[in-house]
Image (cartoon, rainbow, N blue to C red; front, side, top):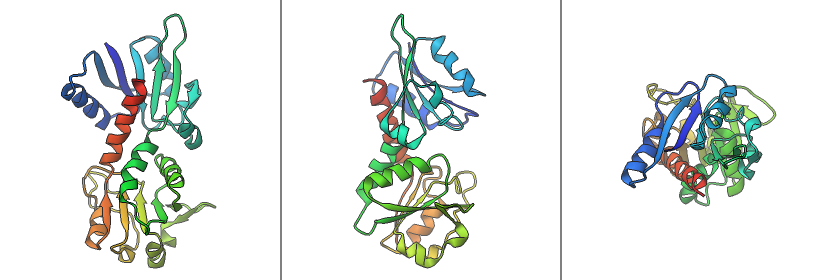
Length: 248
């Protein structure tokens, strides 16, 4: 039985496990299992694949997307540029040490789900939040030729704060991407603190959150005529890219 899985800590509800097990069932894929592997320290990671040669791939979630990099033998160009990994290919060759290649498929998932929605209006973006997913989003926007400004709770040379936002800035940035966890279930009554009155029918609001399906952030945008998109397709596209990488 070949093994795939997700490492992180703690691990609660997992989109990945549900998605892959359903994929295996629906597509009659046999001889492969996908499970959760909560490891309390990253030092425990090598034990998974060195003790069991059936492992040939893992996903990585918080807090290990950066911490896992020293354990890898190679990085894809995207992972190297972003400095974060969410997918690892484990090449097991009898008689040799496992060879690990780190990838960042968040980029592909985000970029391919966003691109069909873009219009000539979407030349400037606001990115809300500066957490783990933000680097992948920035990399994708650079590839798409979209200028961006990060909005964070703390000010820096690259970031502005939510207090700096006004309706003029909102009107000038027709693409607004929420990379923060604000609005995730069960806290569905929350939303990023931005001047929503500046949003109009040429805006596109993208929320990396997929639970709930329509966050309050997206609802407020829709009510003002904006196009909206949640993060579910990004996860699906990212998961399918992982599958391609593992089965090359």
